[in-house]
Amino acid sequence: MSFLIDPLKYEFFIHGILAASLVGGICALIGVYIVLRRMSYIGHGLSHAVFGGAVVSTVMQWNFYVGAGAWGFLSVLLINAVARKKKVGADAAIGVITTASFAVGVAIISRYRKFTKSFEATLFGNILGVTTEDLWIICIVALVSGLLIFIFYRQFLFTTFDSEVARIYGVPVDWVERLFSLILAAVIIVSMQVMGVTMIAAGIIMPAVTARVLTDSFNKMVFLSIVLGVLGGTLGMYVSFYFDVSSGATIVLVAASFFVLAYAYQMIRERVGPLKKEVRALPVPPTGTHTHLHNPDHAGFYHVHEHSHEKPEAPEAKPPS
Image (cartoon, rainbow, N blue to C red):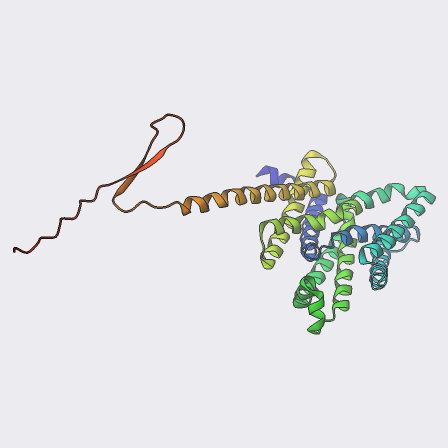
């Protein structure tokens, strides 16, 4: 038990493990909808777009969450506006806007080199620097995001599986997608300090993909994804503490190990399942018989012989003539 208790003596570890668990859970919840929509690239793209806002807010001495949040929300609105054009797809819009935003951040860093160290933490995460204020903001974003997904559960679900049919039934698909994108941007912003820009996409996608491998039920997938996200954040913090490696990278590696185990389990299950069905389908010999094998030619070919132990029925008695 000392393995689990000793790290809790340090305040920075308590802050870190709370932040990792909250971020892991809310990222996993958002990831379910992203994986089912086959939009894994949007998490990666938005994390890079928000990086530009983080750089600008630091240089301008604005509050990090205000500057990065405004930049992220603006990026989302631009992506949705460009993606509506028939000649430009959503993936192209994300590529153009997020790459340009990331390039703005890199250009500013190259101009003001004194900020290089602080932006390394933004790129790769600095969970040990999480403050009480950061924890409160993470809690608020996680609570509001979870509440919005619960309130608009049907709209999100309908839009995720078939947006065209959802339009026919009167669901405001455009507004639902905008709301979801804004929630995603908020989650990415509060996750930057925990996992860093380079690891956020993996933290969002991996728990949901692992849950998808294990189940075909949407409700079970949501539950498993959240559990895996929280567990990955917690275990990742302990591994990071004892091996003295990057917390964000460790959390992602733990999530990746969950996926490998789930995938291996599913492959074994798929191979063993048909064998069980074949065994159950073997013919059952009649009652009162036993089966044994003979190999008279010793060439590896066996012959099945069945012998009955039932007494033969007595012939019917003929009436006397």
